[in-house]
Length: 116
Image (cartoon, rainbow, N blue to C red; front, side, top):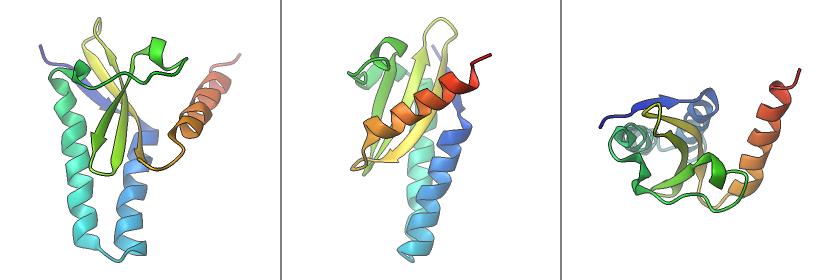
């Protein structure tokens, strides 16, 4: 069974920021390109068996089936929907960041934007 993988705008911005930080701040454009490619390849690999990675344990993300995929020093956060056979990558973050805070900011923004 193959899932349709979508990368949300925020996750694309996250990935771009990873690239820019490594290329421009660390002055390692070749490494930046390789890291970008590894993360992107890993994200699209979720088309097969997306539930192979652990669920995020904290609510409200757990009930939304948020999953966590490590890629080197980064974490790909995604939601697998078995009914629609789709995967949505919502964030890509450096593993030592306060990921819970960043996820909660996203939740607050999405709930605010869905308000009437």
